[in-house]
Length: 227
Image 1: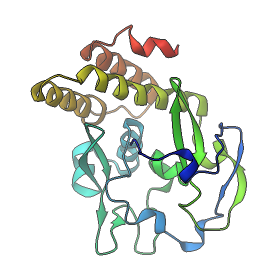
Image 2: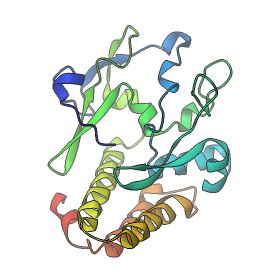
Image 3: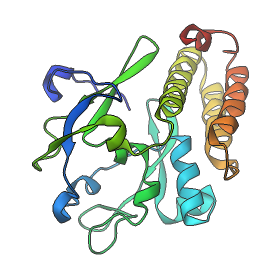
Image 4: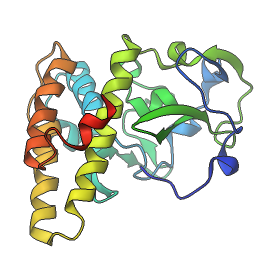
């Protein structure tokens, strides 16, 4: 999700890599679950998030939409996000004790918090959102905080996904509603609704990305600039 703010407003002014130390460790959060409430439609899921949740909960995308996700428009795309429920708008995956019921399979946006991603030059780095979490924090390496195996593969995937949507958005500029609707339907079906096999997410994503590049007329085009 693009945010119309400057880094100076929301960060400590630094950009971090996966091997850098950053002051984010809340040491178990002390029972706080404020970041799991009142998020509106901002907790957007990428394809790996759906792959993880589907495996952890033993269900497909349609069932996830019934139970804990909903669709919304983000930067012109119809994408899934975590559903907030109840008077306190709590994440649907939060227990009555305020703990995440799928912590091992939690989405990337949850793993990041209170970090964000700053995209530039067909890549990205991390930044610390200094106003988002009041808990006392100690320093930890970004890669340890994220708890994602093969962080290099993950970061390459996140970069490819982000710039695929960005490049596709540019292709769609000036096209009619019908084409934009077709593109949104294609992305939703190809990267979310179509079932994923339990193993080798990155290999499956690479094949689907090629489908997406071809559909949008990007094969061999903008995506190749990063390589």
